[in-house]
Length: 169
Image 1 (cartoon, rainbow, N blue to C red):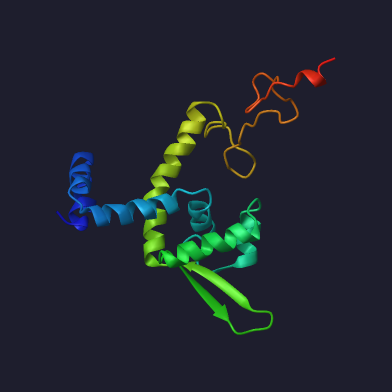
Image 2 (image 1 turned 30 degrees about the vertical axis):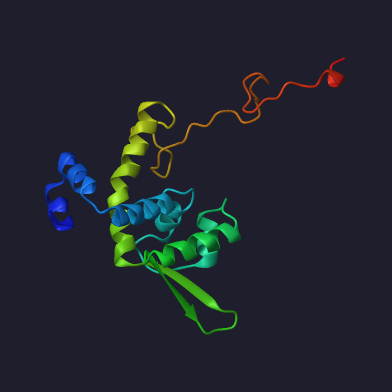
């Protein structure tokens, strides 16, 4: 069965059978690519570049305001290596660099969009964000965040270590 046939049928059983029939080398390469795509930043960077045209490095940094320049550079290089984005350097002073999705990158973004929609619905269902009927002024869902100033008791904190006896008075 070809990949085109799988796209047209789409049944989970057929896809699983097809995956089981892959040669080990192909499966290893696919697993490596999936591992790179499932890191913290790759899909976010693809989404920030988006299908609407070229984006400059600084604009990506602003869209992903918590990413460091080093991590953004590394992620962009990885995505370019995987042929998901193209990097265009213009010979100007200062140099201008733009990133754009390739057809494979657009296809991947289109394929993962239903996953993102499922994730938002899951967050709404469990009360982490307000439902579609309750939107902010700009029409977006509002994220419900816990109070960051209120710390959990030490016994509940992640990696809480007991204090040495010398600190107990």
